[in-house]
Image 1 (cartoon, rainbow, N blue to C red):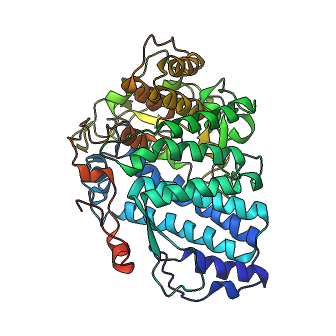
Image 2: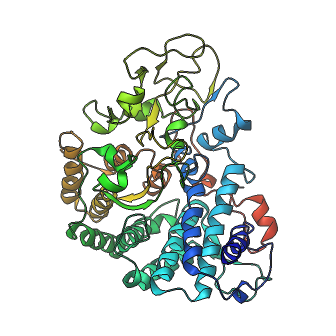
Image 3: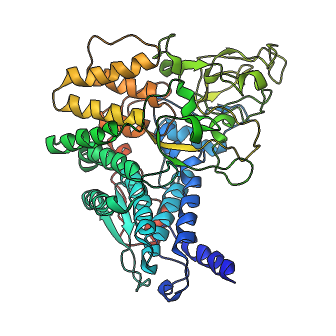
Length: 497
């Protein structure tokens, strides 16, 4: 009976409309036997779709950037232009994937907020509040305003809407309030170090959230970023991984020395869609047979030195099984025995740097460099075991370096970047400016869902790049979905849409 109760609650909590005006408008606080820990786990599980699926927040962060595109390959991957519109910045308020992402993130805000009405333990409440703060940060990042409810006694009223400044202040105050009640770990739980990283990110992006056209960086905020980074560095719990791709491997929960906050995926049984990170680009004739869709841009691939370990390497448990290396796939592809693979027409399966957003002709199956950031789990089937990485130690170091640079200490910033470069097999930079730091962030965190935010913060998101011209200023924010505007009059459409 109690299991049935949890199911009913989940239907109520996660079936919310995009503006948090629940279809089942009733006072949920009457459900006195609710198990807060069960609802908390439901919130963890609910984060998988908007963050791990290839069409949700990851697509909003990567396909809109200079790191990824989803070409229409003849009759394949057209999807009514939904991928093209992300890359060339022509989306509108009815973009299905952006709308779904907005809705699913708000459902998590609702469920984590509502849990607090049921007297959870101090730790359960703190974890729920950190998950909520994490999602609020994503909503501010993407849309600049957030429907939010802190009173669950009157669900007949429309949720209020926080603007960016109010949301940023709430995120920071929440982190400060819950820090002592959070667990020390593991990485797949909302923990103290994850809270520190989220606060670092919020402070680093604060000036961009409040002034996207001309981001500013307050000295006190940058000092706080450095101090938080030092707390994590001085803990001695983390180090740069000897093998870069260990951070993303099927057993990354055991072998990564960098991962601070992850989504737990249990191979073969209880998993998010982390397999999409390799399925989205692998060709039909590779092992595993992929979807032959997404790729990176040739110009982005060319930003890597051939000596950079992050560009690609054989990976145990993957290359000898399927012939696929971790990192970027370019040129002739082979099977596990070294035999050359062919495309569906019998031509050489050799991926090229040249790629167009709308493709036609005989080579459309092979255009575009493919990306395998997460080593393939050949054991677990569709439910891969790779824990999905939200935050890792290299980002702590790079954010500290950026804060130092923005305070005028380029020498200290460059020293941190050069230490990371050395770990990746590269020589030291002799000088570093904002453009070089942005490029280093791209090389270190490619396809991890940070690129759009980084481009915004560095003032480069509207620039032209491959298959995209200069964008208008309205693209600094995503549009509020039409359905959300219709259901919550407190929402106001963002400028330009």
